[in-house]
Every structure is written in structure tokens, then in C-alpha cells.
Length: 68
Image (cartoon, rainbow, N blue to C red; front, side, top):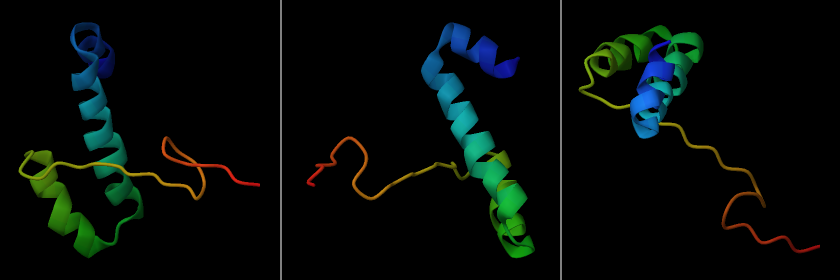
């Protein structure tokens, strides 16, 4: 519901919320070791650090050129 309400006003705010909380913090919470959780999650929860997400694939993406 939070994301829907944010998106209703400003989609960029809802995107930031999802990337920071779900992809950034969520990935650390699920896949991170205890040291990573203690190191990053408290400061990310206070927005002292901002989470992000990057995805790359070989020969894919906006700048990819396909050569057969």
C-alpha cells in the first residue's frame, strides 16, 4: 500500500522506495552474512546509506550490439 500511495503522487519516489528497501536492504537481509547485515542494514534503515541495484547481462541491455 505504501508503494501504491507513493506512486500515485510521484512514481520516482515509489521506485526509489522499492529499490532501496526491497532490492538493496532485502537482498542483504536474505543473502548477506551476519557481518554484512550488521554493517549495512542499520545505516540503510536511517538512510545514511542508500541501496541500489545493478543488473548486467552479456550481450544484452540498452547499449548491446548483437553480432551473429
